[in-house]
Length: 344
Image (cartoon, rainbow, N blue to C red):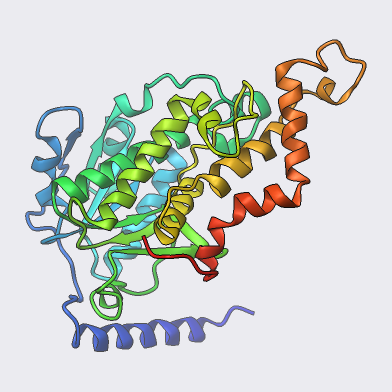
């Protein structure tokens, strides 16, 4: 049964704990924009837009980044903005695909800074099983707009961190925040540049905090390497064949450009001291080549049974069943589970 008094007590306890932590750290109970303004925004492709808008979003060196797309995510995004404001956190920058989205947000939240970039959603992606999964197989998690958002928000993140020297709380719209996290960021976690929400048990690419990252640092390498991998597999899917365990793959390649899969490979690379693409890209190359293969690829009498596509699909399935292949592609990931590996 729902316990309203329990929720109220939890909120009171979290508020008291937050206040106690604020007293012993460099965090604040409230973060408000340096120069609050109504309907502050613009197209990121226009020169100087970000620098002009940031004072209405940032609070000192801190800013929160949230992406909003269609009507559904606008509702969730507005809910999160109000949720955070109730905790004293108003230093928000919204990122949208077009001006109309920001106009809609400003109807109810006129003092929230909002920028847009239609060009980021206009790039034509080459054919690949990843890029075309929604069209070919109806997989909504591969919605093209969502894939463009994954790429664009990570590029914007790098701009905010490396070009503008900001600490960024990167958010997904479908989260609820129960307490001000800054006393944790500026207290026991202050020595950490990158703080991720866990996700069974890997790092979540949607909810994390970046602080104190400068060009040339390990944190900067991680963010830039992640962007480079997303761009590579989105626009050069054939390059998956250059990886140690994926030379067998034939078109159409899957070439996993997912931000979270690649993020965890990049973290694993840093932990073991060498670049790895094994678990986030190479394992999924075998998995989805087999999963998405046309039915005739499994029929020995079919005319196209011997085609490069079908041979590649069967090779992927064979590798999925190979203990050696499983071990090779997941070796690096064990470092994320505390399984060892040198620092990088």
